[in-house]
Image (cartoon, rainbow, N blue to C red; front, side, top):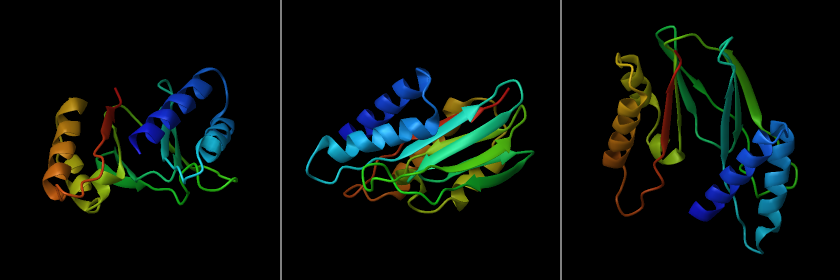
Length: 164
């Protein structure tokens, strides 16, 4: 799974940064995962494109866990009903657009963090008053590790962004 995820993320990043649009990049990554091996090989894609001047943010999800947003002091979820790459030939992102403002928080995470729900994550973000995204990411990673079964633990990855 780690190799598939690294391949997916690296290839997707290269495609998008060289000018491919997100949908085209997803289709190319999906095709490469389908032909990678005779065995099922799948990976999720979770991508946010933020216009730092306007705050317009577009979320692209392919089989990814929910993203938690704190906007104007209230939390909400960005979820997508889509499949991971590497399963079916035809794939599409679930897509959501939101306008964010300075001070708003985006928390993107792997399903190892959300395995026990997102209520605890939303409560933690609502009470967070610092401006250090690393600190908040460590809180989520540590609490997710504490909640998980050490013998069947899924990956625990957290990215936190605070708009300024």
